[in-house]
Image (cartoon, rainbow, N blue to C red; front, side):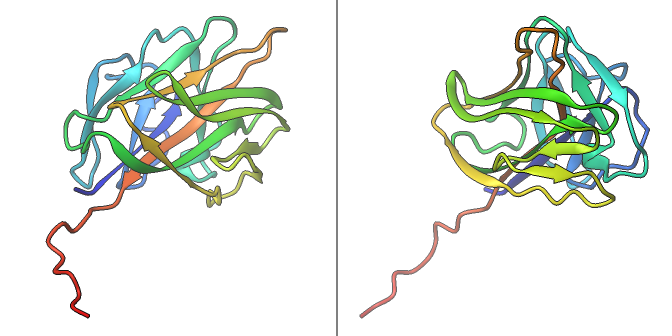
Amino acid sequence: MAFDMAFNVRATDPFVTDQNYAVAVAQFGAGFIYPHTFTNVNGYSVNAGFLSGAGSGADRSNTNDPRIAGIYFITSATDTLRVDLSSGSAPGAGTYTIDLAAGDQATGEQEEIIVKDDTTTLITVSAATSAGHFIDATLVDRTASTTWNGATVDKTFASTTCNVVVNPASGGIFPCLAHFRLTKASVNTNITPRRA
């Protein structure tokens, strides 16, 4: 079963027009706090949202790619974007392609973002960024532009819970999550084996 859902984080919706596979997770809009059913233009749906909402959303640049137009940042307590992979049209456990952007158009920060399969760490972003720079899923620093050019990685989820932890380190640094996307290609289980 195919699945494609992205979360573009900011303060308000509408601020920019999201891609058909993406939904806005706007701090002051419906569905910011978990659980909420998000449905994108392509018809895919999933239950997701931030567990506490202890941070703040911010609109940054409406000329950037919508994936990096805004951010969710947190100053002290940790917060988590939870995605239930067995809800809506999400197909459950399995291998997903992950795209993410951690950074801020306006300021440089120490990014501390952890992608987990329930409690098992899959990706750890721990890097300083300059203003207008974002760390992608392969941990490469990318410059903001009208087209997000971040690279993706494939990760296997043994559970049906995806947690994206926005985790401030000590010293008052503000990690920023801008974009998170999960894609799972459909698998054809009706392939006839090739005869030798």
